[in-house]
Length: 87
Image 1 (cartoon, rainbow, N blue to C red):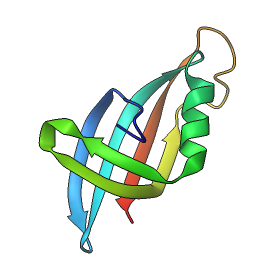
Image 2 (spheres, rainbow, N blue to C red; image 1 turned 90 degrees about the horizontal axis):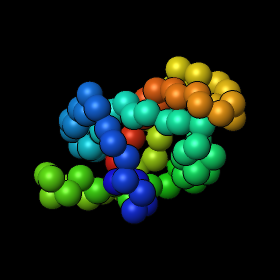
Image 3 (tube, rainbow, N blue to C red; image 1 turned 90 degrees about the vertical axis):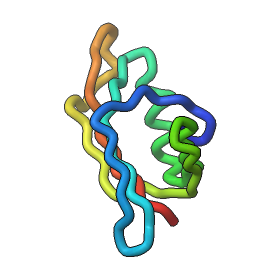
Image 4 (cartoon, one colour; image 1 turned 180 degrees about the horizontal axis):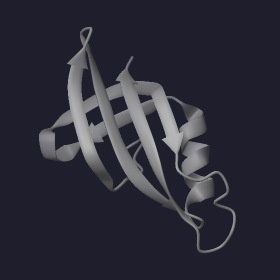
């Protein structure tokens, strides 16, 4: 979860790097969810929660990538990648 928004993540990797937690993962974004996701990511100030592991921390984006640039076209879907770094 990022700022109370649930993301369905895959290829999740969680590690400690230089005494900070790093979380990387991929998730699908559709043309219907694109606007809300990009607004969320532009905040770049996240409360990360992983309820299954009882983990919570504050983070910013360390890396970001997308497989598609224009999700405004109806019916499109892309893969987003995020690497979040603990503040």
